[in-house]
Image 1 (cartoon, rainbow, N blue to C red):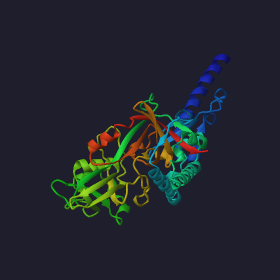
Image 2: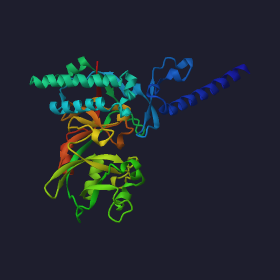
Image 3: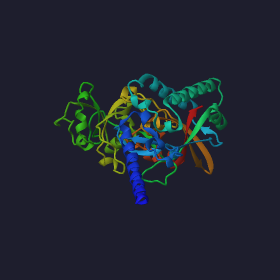
Image 4: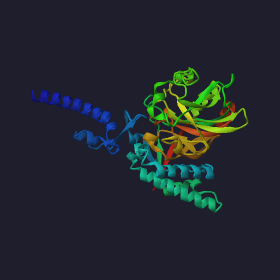
Length: 399
């Protein structure tokens, strides 16, 4: 009887422990981030698991809701950078590093999302370490550029001597065998457009009026509602938004997908427009763009813009040195070197995570590379043929 009882007790205890682990993970998202990283031995008192050093992290979506837990030690690992020249445009990288560092300085108190340590805390990396990394890189680049010499940041030996190199392996719940990150590419497209509605350019992009944006009326409407004409003369919400420009439907969809559009107007002028606020509906992976219900309102801007909690605060970014990614779980300002093969040769490309998008919240298996400004999709596709579909990324952290 005692042996049977002990076995029943062990089984019951194991079941209880399992559910305690699950419940602990599910409720972590509601707790401070410092409590979201937990070791296995903190969850269970079973002596047989004392040797475990796995660190679980609770991944959240853009609405700060728990999605799943991941073992940080399986995603991130300290390594050495491969022996190859690191490629990037020195001036452009310095610009994005400087603008990203300034965003932390100016808006950390207004944008708490950028103060999240995220998954990197499983490697002992904090936001303070990220800021030290940005500061050091800015100093090195400024010194090297002022002395008219190739920057030391292109030397893998200098990188390995001065930085922790953390390899990022993909974590994709839908494709568990995926190891490398998928590298998608985005761009700014130039599109012809009109400042007034015409038979050809009849799809508007709108800006929210400052005096009306506070009541959140725009969150009631899908993209399809907007395109039905609710803001046009005779529509039930006419007068609540301002039409900035009129495009073709193709132009609108590319502007919504890429986040920025450069419009060449029929009057000979041109201007950048960037997404400002959305209607609060999530982007749905696998649904074609025209059927997405998410809709963005735009603002006129002077440069290509990346991440920012509001339009006037967004980071000015440059092609070739900017990645869009999961800023909530990986983090804004993380410096990334992606490794891939090009023509049989190993290639390293450096950039900064200074942008994001609905497809990346959450997403631990993909980065989006800002490829450039293009006239059309054909020119864009020709350019990105040399870029990888999958790559191995490394995150650099100042020692």
